[in-house]
Structures are given as C-alpha cells and as structure tokens.
Length: 246
Image 1 (cartoon, rainbow, N blue to C red):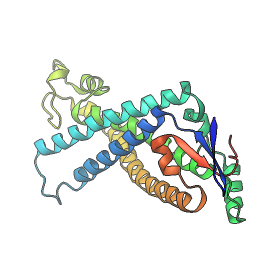
Image 2: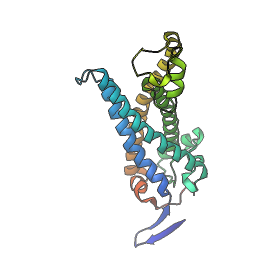
Image 3: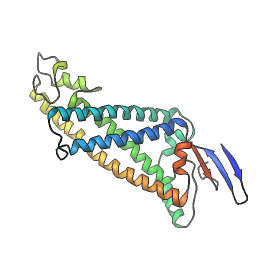
Image 4: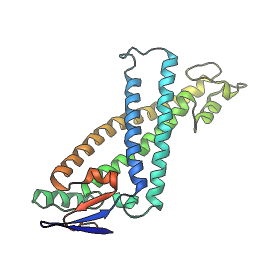
C-alpha cells in the first residue's frame, strides 16, 4: 500500500513496509547483541582486565546467559512472526537468490538504480547469513549455559548425566568436581569444546557480517536508496521509482 506526495519537481510514493513487530525485533536485537558481544569480550580478556577468581568468572557467565535468554526469546518471536506475519515480515521475503544478487550488482555497475521495498538482493544474502548465525549462536549458547553453569534448558539433563552414583544432581556446583563422575565428564568434554568453538567463531563471523551489513546500509543510504535507516524506525519507505519487488 502506498500514498503519493506531489511537488513541482517529483513524485514520491510512500510505502508501509516494516510492521511494528519487525522494527521492535530489529532494535532489541541490536541492543542485545551489542551487550552480548561486550560481555563476551570481557569474558575472553578478563585476565588482561584484571578480573580473576572463580566467583567473577561464574558471574560474568551468568550475566552473559541472562542477556542470552532475552536474545533467544526475541529471536524465537521473530522466527514465529516470520511464518505467521504478513507482507515483508515473512522470512520468505529475505530468502536469498545468488542470481538476483548478481543481476542487482550488474545493474548498479551499469549505472542503474533499482529500488526495493524489502531488502535488496545483496541485503537478503547478508541478512539470511546473519539469521543462520543467530540461530547457531542461540543453540550453542544454550548448550554451553547447561554445561558450564547448569542453566536451563539443558542444565538438569547435564547434571543428571555427570552426577556420580548416589549423588543428587541438584547438589552439583559449576566448576566443582565434587560429586561428579569423571568418566562422564570426560565423555562430554569434546561436545562441550566443539559447542564452545562454534559459538566463539560464529561470534567473530557475526561481528564481521554486522560490520559489512552496516557498511552496506550506509552506502545504500547515501548512493542508491535513501531512507533505509529511517524506515526501520517509521516502517515507511519513500521511493521515487517503482519498486522492483512490489
């Protein structure tokens, strides 16, 4: 749906594109990911920052996990809305096409400036990869929350598995070998290590993609399609040309 504004020079069509749930998800996601990255970097470089001791280590993990829960809830709601929502909220609208991305790039190189209501084809590629990374980070983060400090949803399963015979799983404490079965802990260690490495390197890749995404948005805002940033606040895009994906 669009409305048109007329003046002496040009006609601008205003389209309602991003609904409120999508806009809320986007900015909440930005805030939570920024917080998670900050706490995660503090955890990685705690020695250099002068942070030591088991209590501090556990507290940092707990803060990271609590923010992670909010991140997972926000992501889950967005994925559900991507299935049951309408219009450009649907995940099908960000499904990437390498051919479309290539054609879009060629069009830009030829001096053309195709306009899009949703993400342009290059944007779809970036956003799709970011969504996959967010899902991987959510899954591995929840698993490590269970193995490291026995938090839900996997914590009770982990403690039940590693508890020694005759020991109540709820009595186990993080980073304390009292009451654990060392063989079970050893069996679980490779999976815990793998999840940690996937989580860490996915975080690094996400940082890189977020930087590329921001750079792409800035370039598009300045050179190709002004109003991309403001649209994520208002939900509306103002286009001078007919959108390719209307």
